[in-house]
Amino acid sequence: MTWDDLDAHLDRVPGTVSAYVGRLDAAATWTRHADATHYAASTMKVAVLAALHRAAESGALDLDAQVPVVNEFDSAQPGAPRFSCARHYDNDDAVWDRVGGVAPLRWLADRMIVRSSNLATNLVIGHVGLPAVAQVWEAVGARASVTGRGIEDFAAREAGITNLVTAADLAALLGALATGATAPGNLASPAACTAMLDVLFAQEHREDLAAGLPEGTRIAHKNGWVRGVRHGAGVVLPDDAPPYLIAVCTTTDLAGGDDEVEDDACLLLAHISAQVWAARHRL
Image (tube, one colour):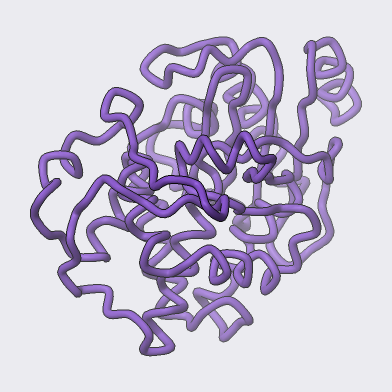
């Protein structure tokens, strides 16, 4: 299948399908509506992870510090009451089991990625602050991505404060982590970038991009989903070709919003991932 064939296939999907594909430190090989904005869902958690590691490198935070595990957070909407997360809307009982106790920031950040815990995300944001997350997007040259609020901050959502990403910006963020792991970059030290990639390699939700790859293929990635939205972005490391970036954002009628079910949006991302894998030597 050529890129034109893939575009023609995606043209028939109701909604918006955005993509960015290319090797590290090179121009994109294939893009599709790469600068279109989508609701971020959980993909914004990669920027939160980077903000935490940057704060640790600056000495502002200690990754191994034990912090209270609470379920009450300040809203991004000034004057709004504090908000809480709903356990049934989360993906990680391990974090909820620690409510009322303490946990290391490093562990919370891991759970935020590998299980996509919303509660862990809000706890990490509470320590790094939303301005630090904005600085991450700025550092990687993001054009339109915004992390304006925590997860389930409904007062902020009603006030129009939201979280947005583009396929191009997600690729820029993942690319900064991958290249920063081998050389000093503008995001974090090589050691910090390597540590973040290790967390992304441990991702347990593998029903979209990873599902389109041969078993055992290494991919450092993060996905995100709510009803009508399914995204995935990562760095793929083939054994027989250079690493490459893939970021796919979909706002369609395909996503059911339940990651435990292989819905049509998951199948679409897996299909795109498989097509890119087949073309890996030509990227």
